[in-house]
Length: 520
Image 1 (cartoon, rainbow, N blue to C red):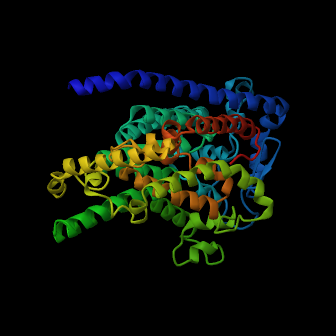
Image 2 (image 1 turned 180 degrees about the horizontal axis):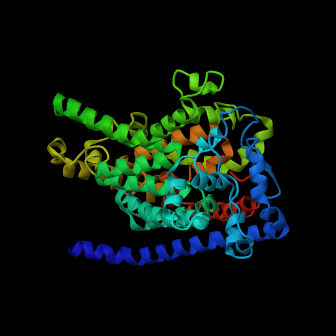
Image 3 (image 1 turned 90 degrees about the horizontal axis):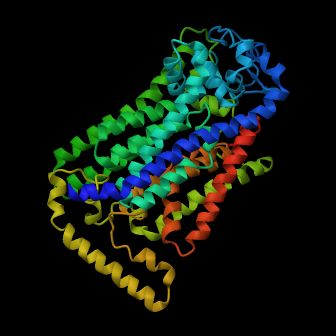
């Protein structure tokens, strides 16, 4: 109890500062967005007031009209399939236009239009199924007694979800890195990440980050059932949430291997595989259920002439068809000369992701390239990422203390060699003997692998400019940046670059996004 109190005494003041910074950021980012919107809204008041009529006319053509212009979210096509149902467009009153509701109404831009429309009317069109239901359903549930406050409810959900996500991320960093200052620095970097404007808007980034960080925290804490629940919610917010099943698969793979080859318990290994498969299925279930819902609405009961092409596919996945058909998403399909500015826009976050993965791979090559199978048992026994806290782990725990002493002596020997060679840049890094903590610990491996897969997907398959917000919920980005700030010889310079990049993208994003210019 004494150790716990002393630990809380050290960590509590930074947490209070951390919470204050989070609340400040949640007020500052919407204010920046509103200031940016006010410039546009003053010039387009008449357009905003008649926006509902433009929407009604444009919906019949399969597109949405925004402030001052049209944004074609789909190609024009005819037929009785679309719309699925009729819903009158949102029509704010003149009184609302002259109050704070006017700014919220003007702030519904880009994908926010889809989320608000879905929350109000449901899924009317084929292309609207690209937007998963967690945010619209949550906003509709909260604003049920007051439908006119739909946009406000969505704003509150996004910003409150961010605060909870930041708290979960701080707890995750403490549990995994075991270093309060590094965890606090990483959490602050997340609070001011380059995609902050999306965390303050009617977008799914905040809800997805909350579900991801919550699931990751419970995953490393050993509460796997609760982690599966959070990961399933992340798959209800964004399609890439299904990738979080990789954490369960990673753990299942190592625990089954340990049970089979170290303990010679085939029954236990099969039990671990079955439980892991069930948990993975639960994570995929919300996304697959949503695809089944789309198939039922778009394909069932339609004549062969009315059925869309994807309905006749062997595996009728609506989401893949929408991304490919309407947005041109596909392998190397974005590699065009005209898209060079978008590659430049995404280059900072992709470079940071590349450095995070490469640095870990170069520092721990045996662990990285073996997918953790060559991890020393003392590192596997440090947490609950690899092994469970059961009898299979307790047999190996006897040698942890002796192995830790050998590892510490090994690190001290490398440190003395670096000092003798005059390589002072690596002294601080090599002097950390604790293999169970820090960015280079084996427990960080599944997070690094997850980041690497998502970064490759963003670069080779997706619209690359989306990478800034697509990767914003990947913990290794912030852990690596926080790590090099503290332990690298040029940490001050790296810290300046990272913070300058984040602040510049916050202001740039607030200006461009709120005025309906492309920004990720």
